[in-house]
Length: 395
Ligand SMILES: Cc1ncc(COP(=O)(O)O)c(C=O)c1O
Image (tube, rainbow, N blue to C red):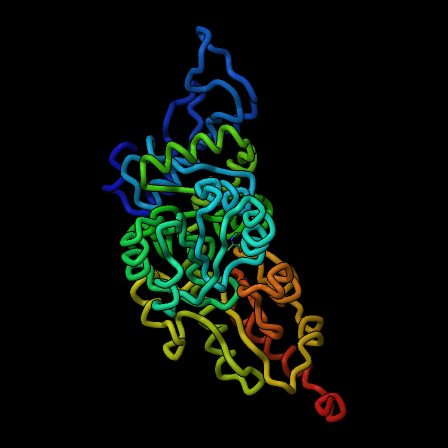
């Protein structure tokens, strides 16, 4: 599918795979498990050794680049890695000792842990700030700033940042803008359209989509950055396994319709929660009273499947978790099933004490694909059953 731009995003998700024809006529690509390939003469050939290249991984890497809007996805293909964190560490290889990175102060806890506990030991300066405070952001970007790091929507506060205005500030200072687009996927936002230089996804989430594969992918539209990241992928070796690449690619075939349904369900649940007397505040980009709703309308094709909220003081959150039937108390997100969690204790515990720590009582939901009437009635029943007694309320 050379002329991919002619096709819509769902078509590209399904058909970018056709690189070579197998003699058996397989309609769907098989998993190539071999770690080495027979070559016709000595020297590195197209398929050489599994860490360097693998046909199953390659299909996924090309499809992801195409979905993010890269025309020449054969050349500027993505890099599929063993996890989302392997992508974070791979991108961080672009920063040299003495240089710095500026990160949104609402970012996945593992990203905070990597930058504060590992990158700083390599002589890299790490600064966090609220990217909606433009003056503060500008003051932190200087000639030593290699990367500026954004998550939009952010994990776990579901904050949004105007990527186009931020990319102008970043490019004026000759830095690169990175977007962790895990919550969005290319079916919601394509960050290259807004001036972003490097995109990453934890494919463990929406792209895999079934909570049964761990992986990540990095895509860049800058040839020089691509060349260096390719070296890092081959040399450092944390590549995605063929089986995970198969599952991630399989996830792409249904990603469009799944994102639509995740978004529809999350929107209805957010509306229900925001009208509930038991809920203090709901954070969801699709709510018209959400503080970043305008950015959401500008940047997002759908409002996504993630929401966060605070309960009123008369609700016992622990009771709520155990009363719920359909929402599992578990980390991670983007699967077909609904998950609920407390970021400060679960996904963001390692960010405690840093500028990127999560609020104590914030609750996050990854809204799944169950029937929304069932999700709402389960939540409604559980909230009512979790009202504190008069004695507990006084505590
Ligand atoms: C936004 C975001 N980025 C990166 C990661 C890390 O991905 P992985 O768990 O696949 O290493 C996560 C994991 O939850 C995430 O939510």
